[in-house]
Length: 265
Image (cartoon, rainbow, N blue to C red; front, side):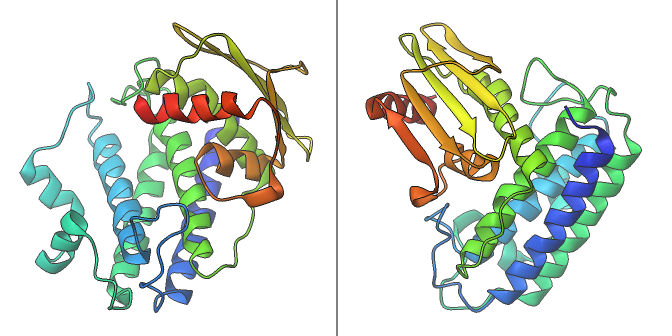
């Protein structure tokens, strides 16, 4: 697993690229975000900026155990005008360009988050939604991964995407299989899925059992094989439209049941 500096470098780099894509595509708010079709670009900026501020507040104040925020805390951390706060609740307009000051708001929140996470020892106790890891290090990893996928989303609005860096993407596949699936209580009837990165970033064998999921790193035959670059495997696992860049070989119904299990959890 990469170290803190790796995640902080990724968080800063991907946040900067997200802001660049947001400004470049600011006029395209009538275009749904391909990976999040209920959102437009302004919704995406509000979402990711809000996540950054939520986590910054949680880690900066060493909040433990994990809990929801009070209305007063939400107001303190979000720092949104009444108009933008309403958009955050009900959805942003489709006939108005992304406001430039919202991108600045995003950048300020991303910078504060990076500074807070840099200051926090990775093993320090901070509440998270994942029972098995209650540390600041969880958030260091989670925020690097969160912004990398949403950076791709912001770029996809204009149809000009850059792959997620290979090591970061491979770690993201690990996180999905080792953290997200257990947290979602994904399960099955013994089906197995072999994920293979075509850019030599790793292999994963996922077994979906009635009582949960099990992941090993090995070359083995599964009921279905999923092949692609680490970036495309990660995007595929997050439900992004990767088209024929990912090959699914074998029993397609296994993948259908896999995604249905995650959606229902």
